[in-house]
Length: 68
Image (cartoon, rainbow, N blue to C red; front, side, top):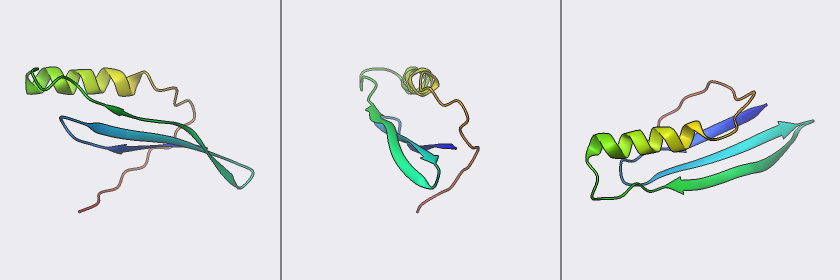
């Protein structure tokens, strides 16, 4: 099972991909997407969408959560 976690933001969006195999969890990939601050909001969101879509997430579980 793979889980993709996303820390959303329009200027910096963090992500982390972990994988569980036989009870062990390992880090697969992590990073930050930082679109240019000179771009419009819609351009930044589009850049974030494209970057997150490039992550190899075959078998990822559909989970969501919110932290306040």
